[in-house]
Image (cartoon, rainbow, N blue to C red; front, side, top):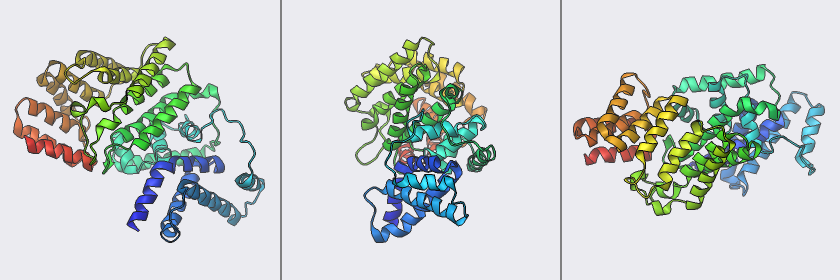
Length: 408
């Protein structure tokens, strides 16, 4: 049974978003779609130990969930025209109706980012049903308590249901008002794949690659939106380092220690091309474009020492004015430490600490510990690194932080 549980979990990680998207398209109800998918997972847990794991497990789960939807309609004596039409779709082989967004997952992202929901609710709901992330993972990504994340997801589903939002892709003229949230969700999914907030893997490449795929599809739909190209550039450049970020035993390898010959040069060039496409639109760089420019600085440097840290500091300052956040300030502090030394950087971090920013996150104590170590304040550094190790839910990351503390 434990193996089956791991298998089901892995299938859900990879296929969950597509399954929910397919079911939501069928039922027109995002909440119902997720419930049906969960019921199918329960069936898998009970049947697969006896029958074996199907060759196409995602298709199996989708088919079971669809049958459950139809059974539910039958039980409620709602075998109406809608049921007959949908049941017919299960066997028909004709062409699908044209959709302005010809990708089920991306369409679901746009629908879940409906303006009737707050930005916070859009993010939480979409990460849940598209990214397949747990409530705990979403809470850590959004830096909110678990109960808050759960409430946002539940309220978002109720709001969509109460507002009787049709499960339809918005018309192209409505895309722009949802674009900010859509980009935010795609990047958060990528971020969880790039550096997992929990579990025993530091990199979840399948999740990151799915986010990158969605970004590429979106860039094809909206070639005149520079931030879409900026986000694709950012993800391409960051993903180019995947092969060098983890040792064979799964141990994380930090940027300074990575073998840069393992970086995917073709992907770096794709990222730089996407950044040029963003610039070619002629509206200047916004948040994702600036982050892509920072990633480009890393990607084109031959070593940490040869990296243009002064330029990275300037880019973070610009980013902080456009999209202020404590995470941006913390990253700027790291760049400042590389450009001018740890003392100036520690001032930034201590200010964040005094303001209570990033409370409960491992990020601030981990950076503070690094800076204190560079300043020779060993006992304080060790304490901060151990605090950070205790705050992260990712076992690999925790081990790295503890190892750093032990070496001091």
